[in-house]
Image 1 (cartoon, rainbow over the protein chains, first blue to last red):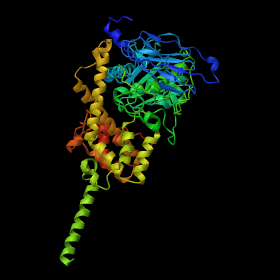
Image 2 (cartoon, chains in turn blue, green):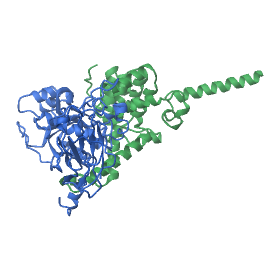
Image 3 (cartoon, rainbow over the protein chains, first blue to last red):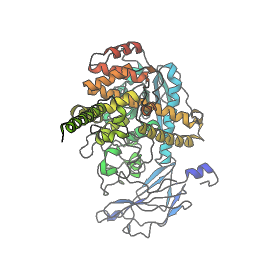
Image 4 (cartoon, rainbow over the protein chains, first blue to last red):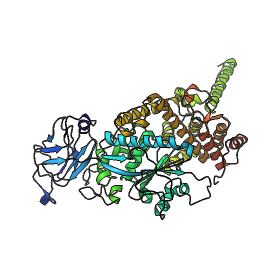
Length: 360
Length: 226
């Protein structure tokens, strides 16, 4: 790490969370000796440690202070029976999930989510819409960075592809003119439609189609039926997101919210007596009691104040995350995180588990 | 009690009843949404406010959010309709506007700090006040649209009355100034909100004279499936 470069130093203000599963009788064979201390490379800052105890419970363990690059976990009695896994979270870096605990953990750069942004509008509104889209993308990036989510939407400076019958799958920005002839069901704007009820047909069309597989397709349209924004996870297309220009609930945080849905935070679909929770933190009652204020996944949030460690974990490693759909699992295969259970004995940290201090 | 005393007691009771009718008739909305609301037994309850707020604020809204508003409005109270009608015609109340302003201001300052060293920085205005004002206006307009949608779905006489009221308001091409709610003055509707109000009015009923005129002025294509 280059400690002389302010931006790098800033990026390296890192918090780390390690989870160590103390083996019970059933998994005694998986026990390994815990190295001590654990050193974090590309890291310099506060750290949080999560331990998983003999019954498989995760909990926050420790924070390293700024300037420390190692965390001594050995003296605790909590994991005295052995180490199993480690998860390290870092601001500006991607989380690391390791099934064995090395003595040195290297943290990698953030995961770049490839996007295709489709602005569906008229010529006179194009500039405004482009500016707004950039605001929303940067708003999402800021939220992900500040809360150590380990993701980034990379859009660069907008460069428009020339209108053509075929869409360049490498282009980020696409401009779709609204067809004034609304009876033309094959025009690109008609094909894109007004929400997720169009998503299956859109993705299933033959090329040329205003859709790029393996990218997050973000459609900025005039109105999304019944929503300010919508991710189409429920119809099997988490890679399709609609943003409304008429209804702006969520403000600068709504794209981050929708990307959260795309990355698996659309479960639990139901919780308690509520059949339509759809991953929204404020609909999970006691499960999110302490963490709900300003949470990214509240059904309405204009100023994101927190993303929990449990949510970040699921966005990267849960089997429901869109990244797993792409066949690009992280070092460990996708885990089956039962978000609807507040139990501490799941194979993932509790959904509402928070870093106990503000990220540096 | 003397007959004179009885007469004064009756007059006092009548005056109280009259005051209650006025306060709950919808003609005096500040009483229903403002700080005096707590004195009014017909005020929207905290639960009703919560139900309405969930619908007005949600980003990706399950059907249940709107259904809750509609069922509450149809079965138990008109307080919900009043909240929606007030939001549609005047914008969010002043307390909500203050909250929106604070949230958006903080969020934008965070984004601005983040993009300072990024190539897209030219897209970002450092005039926080103007950006926040515009964003809050957009949010206020979004709430008004949601209110119109809910009133259309409720579809009872009171709800349609509020949509008619919206059709009678002047329009302009920029979003409604959110400060109108606190000032108690009549504020023009944005054209976008007016369009939704007209369409929602048409969804449930034939258009009133005011909405019919507004539809012609705005050139609203009334192809809503009824």
